[in-house]
Amino acid sequence: MRAGAQLGGRVSVARTDHAPIMISAIGADGALYPIEKMRAHRMGVRHLAVSVFVTAGDLLLLQRRADGKYHCGGLWANTCCSHPDFGEPIAASARRRLREELGIDLALTAGAVIDYEADVTDGLRECERVHVFYADAGAESLPLDPDPDEVAETRWRPLAAIRRDAALRPEAYAPWFLIYLARWDELGVAMAPLVAARG
Figure 1: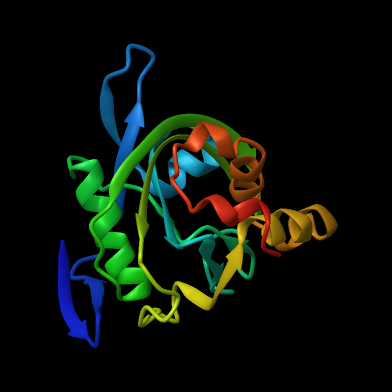
Figure 2: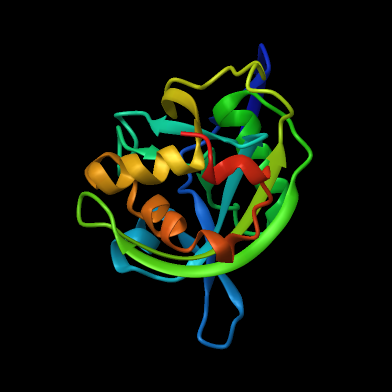
């Protein structure tokens, strides 16, 4: 069960009990069933996820994950990544996590749905069916209110510059974000046409 408190633009969310976080695993027949989040990652069970990309023209908003995250702490990733709670509408979960992590509430547009698998830190494995969402914030001056338990740092960067840096320092980026960069044209994220020019 969740309880929320408004802190600036961010909704601070605390679990009001000690029940495990249940997310949606995907069975062989495509049916969804509940699975505890850490179990899904320890066993590499395919599950639903969301990834959000917030842009401002040709810039993409990145976040560096908080050091205390359960995996990939301190690594750069796209604007927001998470898992819908079991039974939660997918689009609603993307918008909720954007508020909780970064304190922003934007209307999101659905992009593609892609599957990927990747080993992450601490012996865990992501095996996700990712629903991609995006929004153009209009300006990089968008006020942010990151939750320090989730986000260590944010940065607006042109996509071309991100790709160059990721090629030089792949260890600085979350494994799934490197996959997204390699499969960018599959994501269905609309950005300004200058992305290839500015660096």
